[in-house]
Amino acid sequence: MTGFWTQAIEVARKDLRTEMRTGEVFLITIPFGAVALMLIPLAVGTDTPLLRSIGPGMYWVVVLLFGVMVALRQSAVEAGPQQDLLSLLGIDPGAQFTGRAGATTALLLAFEVILGPVAMALYDPQPRGWPWIAALVVLVAIGLGLLGTLAATIAGSIASSALVPLLVAPLSVPILLAASQTMDGLRFGNTILGWVLLLVTMDLLLAVAGVLSARPLQEASR
Amino acid sequence: MTEPLLDLRAVGVRLGDTPILRGVDLRVGPGEVVGLVGANGSGKTTLLRVAATLLVPSAGEGSVLGAGLKDDARFDVRNRIGLIGHTPALYPNLSLEENTRFVARLVGAPAGVVGAALDRVGLAGARHRRAVQCSHGMQRRAEFARLLITRPDLVLLDEAHAGLDRHAADLVAFILQDVRSRDGGAMLVSHEHNRMEPLVDRVVELRNGAVRAWEDGA
Image 1 (cartoon, rainbow over the protein chains, first blue to last red):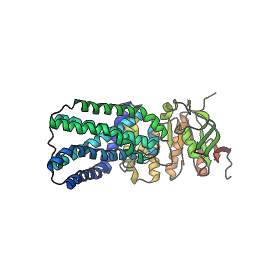
Image 2 (cartoon, rainbow over the protein chains, first blue to last red):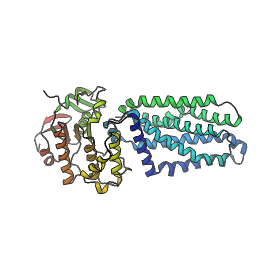
Image 3 (cartoon, rainbow over the protein chains, first blue to last red):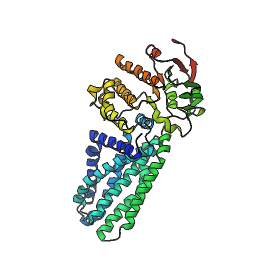
Image 4 (cartoon, chains in turn orange, blue):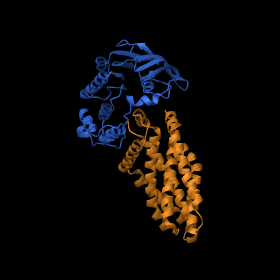
């Protein structure tokens, strides 16, 4: 029998390999995300100060909306027979959750990195503190990856994916707020430590909640 | 007295208000293979899911590989149960080899077993083909390859012969022989009675969710 992390890595590797084959995130979700980012400047026009001010917020909202789609897509790969298979192989449900959330995080990270230059070109947010921004991008990807996977797991246990946005929206508020405020803090030279700590706390809470609830949610889905 | 691998006592399952299984008593001992027949909707698949610990019965009691059907201990014996259900448990966009390797890595089997297992089930030439591009029979063979790697103590086969050619049907016999030789047990559902009967020690029939004595042709 293999250990927790080996199982999680194998599950993540399988999910990422599936994405490489289908390209659903890279070929469909990212182009739509870029279009969504473009719509706001079209509506606002050439009001550069306004665009600069709302840019980071719009970017994170787009990341959230499309991040949920990424998480849902990942969950769809794991239908009933595949879930039964993993259970009967004795795979720890917590490791399954960790692996799926890891793959979703990796895809979200790629999503953020690719759309970042698009947002820069459209909104010209004049960011400062690149090391902090890099850490922020990673923390948000982890948070939304965990949140999306947890929401998709809960929705799977009650057989209704329509609930995912309802579950994600309120829980994502602290993450999006912290991300936007950190960007503003960096731009205007304010302290950002509190917001970064909020992000780290949210990531830890979601990870613990996801791993601990994985078994009961998996059993409830049958 | 030898402890049975599967011991169901007055097991009942309800889905909402509908009774699916009613008072099922069934035992599968070491080295025993039991055939399960019954009309569509008689509860065969539900019974296999109870035996696989994937479904907790709403009535009755029993054990699987020594673990109570309703106890948390059932989670610990799941890796000794092999279930092949109606719908293939394969990832459609992974190749047959990738699907099999995924399982082998998860159970900590050496890398060499993947090629050997695919070769044994006659899929060596198709190992790079994605599961979604394979016929139902080929997908079944890939699932048999999984059983050859995991070698479970309790094998549960739903519609064991559906979509299988003669060579693939021989694989069913091989897997059952293997599990018997290890003092394991098996239960298989099949509508092809002439193929099933030579493989099993006894046959039980499910009729309207309850076990009945089976009379061929009834």
